[in-house]
Image (cartoon, rainbow, N blue to C red; front, side, top):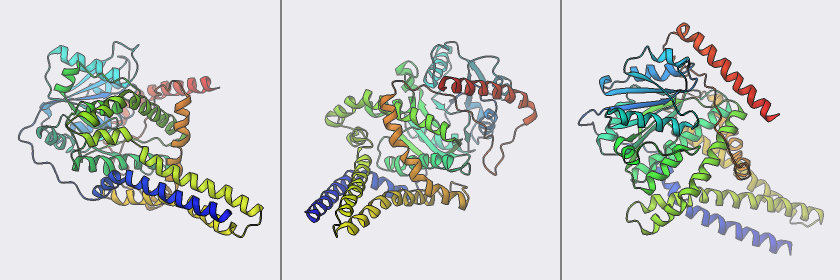
Length: 455
């Protein structure tokens, strides 16, 4: 009887595994093409005028990194206006911003509307009301650093007729520990193994919070930036798919941002992502499903976002359930002294070990694919590979927590990395030292308040 049960379980496992792999074929193809270098976009016929929007509440410690990188762009600076969004004229960021040409301070007036989406919407509406004309809006975070050719590369995308485009998101602190490298690797996956493949097959790209532009005509039609969920980037991505906006990915438009180094910070950040993703998916799923069936264009993109992570979940659930079955069945066989027990324990070791081993190999593959972009040390790369399964497994409890937690608020993340690793971003530290101290005091007060709320 035990042999029959074990044999049947193996057959069911292999059938489920085969079905899961079929559903994953699209992503497997994206991964294969992700290993092939992208072709560069043709040179733009003209340089277009852009506004760069930077939400920067209490970001005086890092704001000069992005402002210097904008100043160092190899693009016509008369065609670039930067808007740094703050919540108070007393924000120390304001004094720093005044030193930069074509850079404006925008002080929010409607602070009762919280979140990055409302901050962007407020400045976009103000620009429209002022009569100033820009052909597209770039959205960046205060902790970003743009490579000198970032705007030039993105201008090629706009000149080619794309309504939106996203650049290559790299990390400032690959060597900041396994949490930082795990987070950086997640964005590398989105860059190289997702958006790169999508662009090659003219599918819709997925935005990840920063480092992208949106054509002005899109926001003019909407009357501003109308995406206010806690993951406003995901909401806009879904909107772009439903409304067939023309988007692309440019891996040569590279920029850097800071990854969290503490588990608690990373946990809160990813909880917000998971909760926001589920909320947005629920909001747009019917429209995506309807478009997948009835629309003439972009059926594959809509199908991909309807099924979403289901293919990955299926293969993981199949493997986990099979491992649990072998564990329980192994205990039963051992308890009853059945000679099948050793085979069951081997199957358990193989199934559980293969899950962990898969993520280690996958992380190593990503690091290999991204080797020209990363400056991670050999030791940190090894640690990253072996800890990546644990970093990824955290999404399971995060998913369940997001289901039972009614509201997930955005919590400020304290940024402190003012330079790329081994590549300092030049600015006068002394001039902004007092400003950063003021921000540190406020950040500490925020963290202390959070501790008191939790206790």
